[in-house]
Amino acid sequence: MAFLNSTNTENRLSSMENELANTKNELANTENESASIENRLANTKNGLASI
Image (cartoon, rainbow, N blue to C red; front, side, top):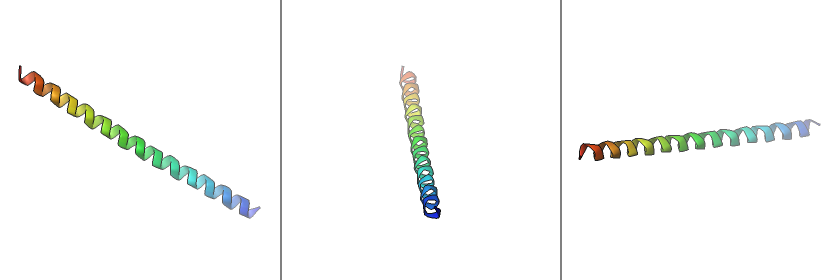
């Protein structure tokens, strides 16, 4: 039974590590989206300034 408990714990840990990796990827995606929006805003401002 101890082996099963150990396996379950290892599986839960692996699942948590995967969730953490997914969260980090989501954060990176959000940061990239934010940078893209900031770039579009800067481009829009530059376009308006040229009028």
